[in-house]
Length: 111
Length: 113
Image (cartoon, rainbow over all chains, first blue to last red; front, side, top):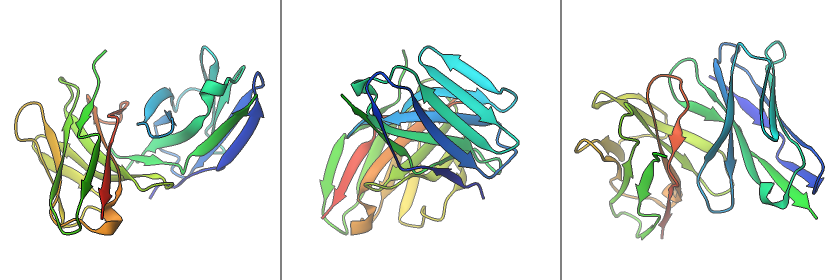
């Protein structure tokens, strides 16, 4: 089945850019998602990208997809303290409809 | 904006007791899901539901679990005899079809003592 991996921790200074990386194994995944989870809260959809796209930009967020390397990244420009959260990469398992989540990257933004 | 809601937000129960977690998916959605997240771990798929039947389930979703859509709006997850290891955050999700974006509820935090 699908396997999704992420680095577990990332620390950046306020105002810097953050880049959160994700790798997946199933090359036929057609939708790839980024979710944000603040402490004690649910999953908030941040953005998603179709597999026929290389890049998607949405305000401070930029998603890059390298299908050849099965690598997805989320760049947050001008990172703020309110961006501190866990960020989950998720792909749709092509054998079904369920999402397969990565372990999450805990982003800490230092003042 | 329409959203998925879940009740209760927190539930504490004794081991061996039955719990029912409730979800109200977005009204025109057709596919419904339950996921769980054990504290500090990744979000894991439990089950998907479409057209009043389970379409897919994971190894976690054993005979102790069941899902139901008792009416046109609610989607429930029942755990018949809770175990300590069932303590987790349970997320409901829904979408309009297939591999489209799934919208997640805020979760129910279940603690089994």
